[in-house]
Amino acid sequence: MNSGSGDNLWYVLHTKSRFENVVHNGLVKKSMEVFLPKIKVRSKRKDRKLMISVPLFPGYLFVRSVLTPNEHLEIVKTAGAVKLIGNHDGPLHVMEETVESLKIMVASDEQVLTGSRFKKGDRVQVVYGPFAGVAGYFIRYKGKDHVVVNIEALGQYASVCVSREDVELLPKIMT
Image (cartoon, rainbow, N blue to C red; front, side, top):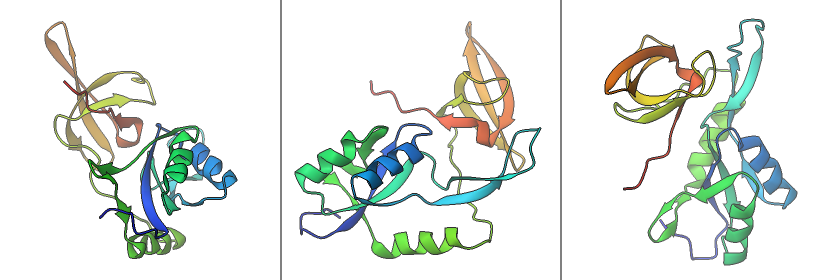
C-alpha cells in the first residue's frame, strides 16, 4: 500500500547495523513518533548474567509520518538511517494493528520468539566473538542457538559454528 492520502501512517525504517537507538533518539529529537520494539534477553557475555534490552528486529524501527517530501528527507537524513522500506512506487506503510500488536507483545514479560533470520546461501558476517570480521555463507542452523557459516578461501571451504546472535546478514551485492 502506498501513502499519498495525507494520512499519518507507520513506515519501516532500515538503519545501519546497531544504530537503532541512535536513529530512534535522532527522530525523537525531530519530534517524530517512533517505535523501536525491544525484548529482554540474557547477555551473551561470559562474565555477566544480566538481562539486556535488544531490538526485536535488528536494523529496523517504525516511524509514523504523513511522509511529505520534507518529512521523508528529514527521516532519511537522520544519522544512521538507511532507507524507508518500500518498492518502486515508494515507501510502504504498515497497518496500525500490526504496530499496536507489536507494542502489546514487547510490553509483556513473556518471551517473544522471532522467525529465521537467515536462509541457506545468505551472505553473513560474524560481528562478535573469536571469529569477528569473518564473512561467509549461511549453511544451516545447528541446535537452538548456533549457526554454521562456510568461509571460502583459496578455492576451499572451511566451516565454523557460531552463536546465532554473533552473526549478521550482509547486504545483497547488485551485479
